[in-house]
Amino acid sequence: MPFNEKIKEFAQKNRMSGKGPLCVALVVTRHGNKHGMPLDPEALLTDGGGQVMGLGKSAVQSILKEHGIDRVLAEEGGRTSRGSVGNMRKYVTFLNELHASDPIDFAQLEAWWIDRVREFFSGKPFVLRFDASKSLRAVIRDLLSQAEKRQALANGSTFVGTMLQHLIGAKLNLLLDLPFQHHGANVADEVSGREGDFIVEDVAIHVTTSPSEALIRKCIRNLYNGLKPVIITTYRGAVLAEGLSEQADIADRLDIFEAEQFIAGNLYEIGKFAQIGRRATVDQLISEYNAIVQVCETDPSLRIDIAR
Image (cartoon, rainbow, N blue to C red):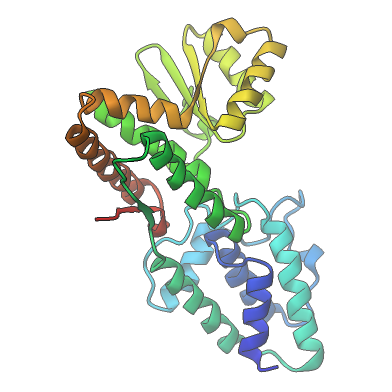
């Protein structure tokens, strides 16, 4: 099998198409070229073993710059991407198998990955299909379904959570005349010093697809600090959050909203319940969402186009 076919087969089989996996591939390829083959996966781990050695924004951007690419592939260079260590191990195994049969042309290998980065930057956006005969919840559900399908094909990516956070942020922009500060979906609250994803008056809003005990503890801290915690999540997440809040004995002090209903309800209100108003409000919502993605995220395929 030709080299390009081998690497293509590996990338497809292991879903190495997202920004995190691409960062891993670029950095590990450089390790192989610099240190020689075969590679020892254990030697490519940090002291704690939880991250890939040398995997970071500056290293990745330096490689991209050599190929004339100035756009940021990932703010953390893939360090925080779920599965980075696992992707590194799979890729090292693949490279060692290649090396065992023939010497690796690392210039050709890196060029192949660079082409995948260019494809990533030119990725197609999601598409919102506004059908007046369907409920607004169904319209929002279709968007999240698209994100779920893409996430299933991109190992380590969090398309659903990212889309959900920025849709909620866009909705708040429309609803409230306040200068909200938006953040990338992978920027942890602890890093930024935030009490939640959004703070409105005395309300701390947490947007998540997977409520956890850690999130409930954060909500408890909100209560201690005089804030009213609100969780916005998926239908399945709402059921989970209800159970966790009952276990923590704060169920009567915490509001939990299902995201589709939360967004759709406000679209009706902002649009004055009129059909033309609903369509105009959906257009405004997506415009706000795309503006947030442009500023806060590095993946342009997170944008949403409206089918006309």
